[in-house]
Length: 311
Length: 221
Image (cartoon, rainbow over all chains, first blue to last red; front, side, top):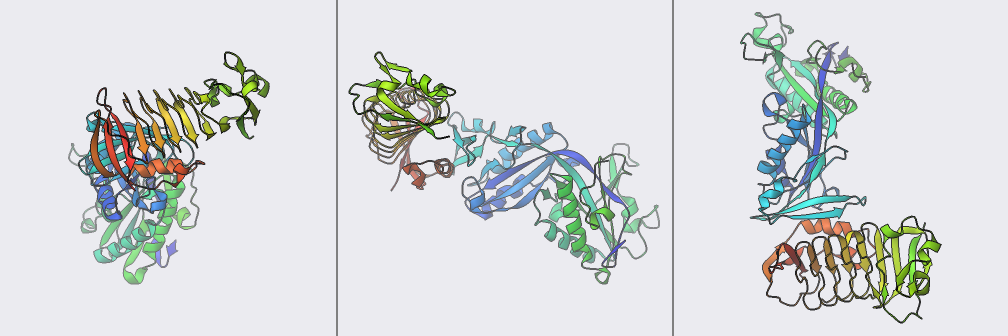
C-alpha cells in the first residue's frame, strides 16, 4: 500500500490499557497557564521512567474555563489508578500550587474521582477554605481556596479518572534525519489539532524506540536495533539501503477511535511531503501482538477504518 | 410542574413559624397534606397561605412580610424564593440548597447556617450569620449590629461595609479569582446577585472570639 508514493507497511501498532485524566489549568494569562502546564507535563514522556505520560491537549478560551480566565487542558495517563493518583498529587503540588496565578479544575466527568486539590489543602495550615458551589449543570462541586504568597490558590477537590489507551504509534522512515524530522513536525502540527489525544515525547517525537529485553540482565528494554540505521549490516535490520533515519510518534488517548484518527491524520501529514522530500516508508512498533490488547492496523487506519476492535 | 407557591393572606395578623415549609420536608406531599400542616399553635398552612403549584423542589413565598419567621430552617436541598420581606431566623441552621430573599430580613438571618447559599437582596437585621458554621451568605443591602457574631467558618459576601467590630480582623484589599466561580454559580438564579462581577474585595476574618475561620468579603465599588 502506498500513500503519495510513500510505502505503508502491512503492520500494526500495539497499545495498552491505561488510566487517564484531564485537568484544566488556568492563570492570569496564557503565558502563565503554559508555564504551569509545561511544568505539570514535564518529565512525563514514558511510564517506563516517569510514572505517567502527559501532554498539553489544547488551549482554552476564557469562555471554556470554570473561572473565566485563559487556560490549557492537559491529559495524563498511567498504567494504573494508584500511580496516576500519586503522580497527579505530586505534580499538582510541585507544578500548579507553585506557579504564580495558576488554578486547576476537573476536566473530565467520571464516577471514579481522584484527588486534585483534596490533600493539597493542608498546605494552607488550617487557613484553607472549602466552598461547595453548583456548576452550570447545577451539580455541587467542592473547591479549595488555599492562601499563598501571590494571593490565593484555587483548585477543585477532585477530577475524573477514565479508562484510556496508551502506546498508539507509527514510525516515519526516510532518507535523512532532517527530512524525517520535518515529516514528523508536520504530523505533530496536524495531530495537535485533535481532542482527546496527546503525544507525550519531546515535541511529540521519539528517536529512541525500544525493544523488549537486553543483553544486560538489569535492562528490561534496549534500543530497537532492527530500526537503527547505523546497525544495518550488524543486526537483522528492517531498513533498506535508502533509509538513514527513523523517528516514532507515540499517541496516548481516551479511546481507540481518538488514537486511530490521530494516527490517520499524522500519517497523511507526514506522507504529504512525499518521496521527493525523502519520506520512504511508514511503519509501526509492536511486540508481535502478544502484549497489548489494542492493535492499530496501519492499512485499516489509512483506509479510514478507525473502529478496530480490541484483540 | 410549577413551583409550589405560598401567597400570604393579608388577613393574617400574627407571627407565623414557617419551619415546616422546606423543599425537602414537602417532597411527596399532596396539596391537601400541605394545607393541613400545623404552623403555629392555632394556625395551619390553609389559614395563612393560598397554595398553588406542584413542584416542591422550588418554594416561592409571595407577598411575604416580617410576620414570617424561620423560612428555610434546616433546609437541605432545593430552592426557596421569597418575594417581599421576612421576619427572623431566615435560613437558620440551613444545611444545603439555595434561599433567595428579594426583600429585607429580620434578626438572626443565617443563624448557625451549616451549608448552602443564602442570598438577601435587601437589608438584614441584627445578629446576621450569628454562630454560622459554613456556607455562603450574600447581602446586597445594609447589615445590622453584631454581624457574624460567633461566626466560625463560611463566607459573608457584602455590598455595603459592615460596622467595625473588635473581633473581626481587616486582611486588606484583594482580587480573588475564586469570585468568578462564585458569580457563575449565581448566573442561573433569578436574583440581582446574578449581576455581580466585582472581583475586588476587602477581606475581614473573624470572629476571633471563637474559632475565627470565617470571612467577610466586602465588594469594592
